[in-house]
Length: 372
Image: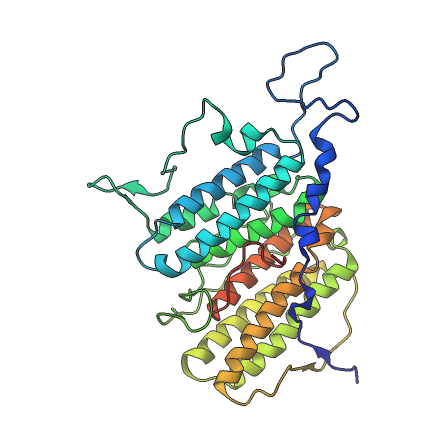
C-alpha cells in the first residue's frame, strides 16, 4: 500500500525572490554601455533609436492604472462588505501598486508612463471610471459591491494579452490576476472565462465571508452555486509533467482533508464543506486532462492533528486551503518558460482557491501563492 502523503503546507510558498525577481531586469532600461535612456517621445535623431515597448506593455500599464483606481474606490466603499472586504482590498491593491510599478521601472518603462502624476502636464485621475461609482445627488461618489466587482474584473478579459509579458514578470502578473478573479467573485460578480477559445462558463459568484480572518462578522450566504461547465480545452503537453502532477495531487490531498472536515461538521459549516468539496471536484476535473502521466493511487493522507470536533474541523479547513494555495503557488515559477495555457490555467485555479480561503475566514493576500 502506498505510504500516506501529507496535506500541503505553507512551506510551498514562493519567496520574495520570485515576486521581485524581475527587478533584476534593469538591463532593459538603458542601452548597454552608453547610458542613454530611450524615451517613447525621443526625436528621430541619427544613432539614437526610439525605445521599443516591452512585451504587453500597454496591458501592463492598464493593469497598474486599474490597481490605482481600485485603491481609490475600495477605500470609499462604505456599505455592505465595504468595512471588511473593502478595507482588505484597499491594503491589497496598495501593495500591488508598489510591486507592479517596480517591475515596470526595472524593465525600462519611462517614469511618466509608470506614474503619470510625475508628468508636469498630467492631471489627477478621475474618481470615476466607466461602469464604476457614480456621483449621488449630493455630489458624493457612492461605491457599491457591483462597482468593485466590475473594476476587479476589468483586467481579466485581457489575461491572454498579459500572458505575453516578459517571462520573469509572468508569475507576478498571474498572481495579480488570480487576486482579481477572487475579488470579483467575493464582491458578487461573475468572472469571465480566462480561456477565450473555450465555451466553458466560469463559476458563479461564490458565498462571501465578511472580515479578513477568523469568524465572519455576519453569516455567509451558503446557497450552493449552480452547476458549471468545466474548462478542459488545451493540449496536456503544454503543461510540464511534474507541475501538472503537483497541482492534481495537491487538489486531491485537499479533497481528502475537506472530506474529514465535512464528516466532523454540522449545520452551516457542513453545508459550506459540501460546497467546497464540489468546487474541489470541479478543479480536479479541469486539471486531470492536463496530466501526461497518471499519478500513483493514494489511499489516504496524513492529517496535521486529530479532528474530532467542529472547531477542529474548521481549523483543518483553513490549514488545508492555505496549503492548497501554497501548493499551486509553488508552480508559478514554471510560468516563466511555458506557453499561455498553463498561465491561464494556474491564474484561474489560484483565484478559485483564494475564494475558498476567504469563505472559510482566511486572509486574502495581494499575490495568491506568493509570499509577501
